[in-house]
Image 1 (spheres, helix red, strand yellow):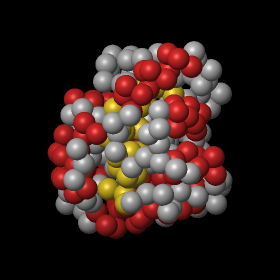
Image 2 (tube, rainbow, N blue to C red; image 1 turned 135 degrees about the vertical axis):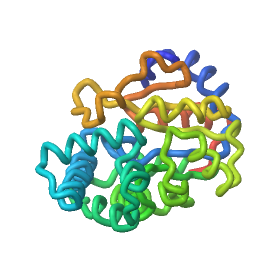
Image 3 (cartoon, rainbow, N blue to C red; image 1 turned 30 degrees about the vertical axis):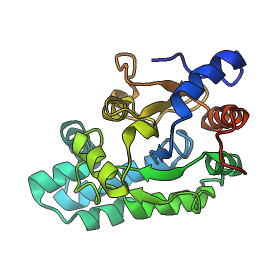
Image 4 (cartoon, helix red, strand yellow; image 1 turned 180 degrees about the vertical axis):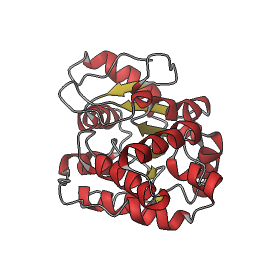
Length: 255
């Protein structure tokens, strides 16, 4: 894996490295939670709490027991929802509506991010283990709603979550994505393994040292994963530098 990206790194080195990895990219794929919005946002903790509450109401458990069951499902199946489907045959629509019924008013629009995503040359898509409705509503709140062609969610993936290969294959088929001409931004390193192996340029979006990290402990591990081309704790700064290099090479979309 490359060293974590810094916008003040030597320009020549960054330009050559970035152009080699990005100048051919035609499709830009972004995870949603803790990637498009800041990792210290309260959105994911709110969703996490709603999942616990769903289990409390479904099984009649106390909060501690529900939390333990939730994390068991997550570690074994990749998402709590998948565990509930496989073991308890629940209605996934009811679960997705319930857990994503959150207040997004605390999430501030990000006009700087909107400018940089708009400048990327090619298609822009969201790939999430959440719901399409949650992805589109959150993107709209961020001021990014008109920039994305669509959001591919857990329903479109037949409830098979990232990092399972089948989730990515379904995404590639639905949108006719050639992975060797695509890049993916994601906050969980293991979710970049299959994309990288399929030829995608991969970017790990990490919390900065000053930000709270609400991800699960196992989701923070990246030291043993070689399938990351770049890592950054500043998505806007990364895209600003990348778009600058692409403009200089004459390969970015006009603003």
